[in-house]
Length: 184
Image (cartoon, rainbow, N blue to C red; front, side, top):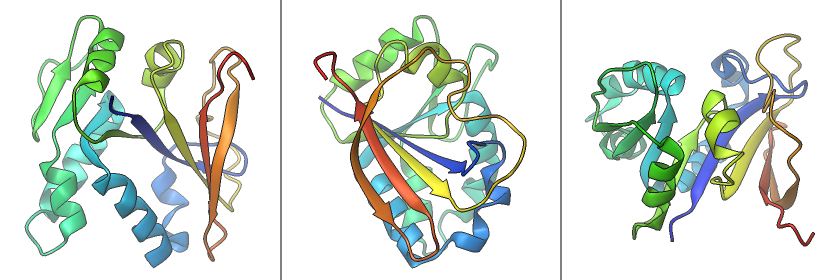
């Protein structure tokens, strides 16, 4: 069974809105290598509408320029969960109908991990309530933003267990969590 692995940038005060604004001063080879490992351990992506719209504009121009990360990012099949988009491009398939069931079925297929970037409405409405995410990689940046959308705002109480941490010299700490089983 494939794992669904989510990777999300978050500020110290829990803000996930427009993480590109607080991220670049902290990016270095450590950051790139960790992100590379996540991407190359996957053979598909799951994206919500907002992440898909941003990525589908930013990533295609980076393809074919000798960057194997950008090439892999562009080449991977993408599954886009949206109830507002009518069509998708960029090697993508639009998930319609019972999206939670479709994601569960994708996880049952043979293959590598499915990587999901960003946290938002898809997590609140489908992934968290249906226990579909197998690992969360929360990239905690050493910056307070003050206002914006917050990580997992609006979900019911959910218990997670710490599965590992990675600390970068820039002050970023990646907190890796897994769902906590009902036994503890």
